Image 1 (spheres, helix red, strand yellow):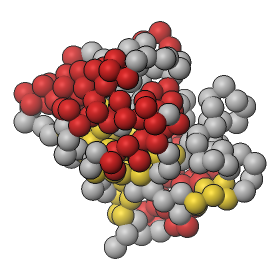
Image 2: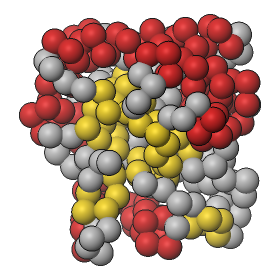
Image 3: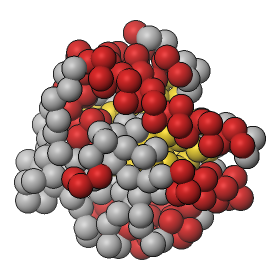
Image 4: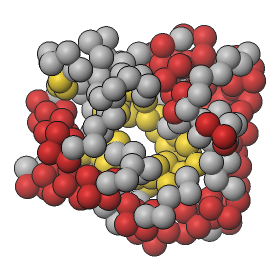
Length: 246
């Protein structure tokens, strides 16, 4: 039986978290950097436990104003510190509910920048390994984060996106470019199936590149996020995938 993980971000101030959590197998909980506070983290953890989904930490730049999606240029030690601080914050809250942090996934600009910069990637990995060296590490299927994570012996889970366009080099198309975010549900479903069934994805220039992913992300802050996630999940189930976090 083939399986794939579906993940979505939680605790970022969206009104449909409860609907999202019913459709995924893992969640990435904002840890107070780009969004979230102790109250939202606790609520997200309790909801995750009730729905039996895997709980992940979602550290990002400490920049609420720009939702952690603005590129910043911090020293490596500062990056490692903010990552470890945010993971530790979520772990302490999770411990009150006897919950375990299954994985870590960097957020937004931190995710994007670190995947293209080996020094930043190492800093992120150092921040993760310092606090939770046995967690799963959700990262792009190609790039510097996976390389740094493997070097540190983190448990890598390659991630693909249902609702983002890819460039020829395997990086996500920058959000400030037209068409970088996929809103059309049919297109998102088709992309998800290409990744899950054929281990490839069509780029913005309409050519296919390899993409081997164990987890698929749907961004929870989109206006049609729930409908898109429902459609992707339904399509995967029709193709006899088990939706499961490993």
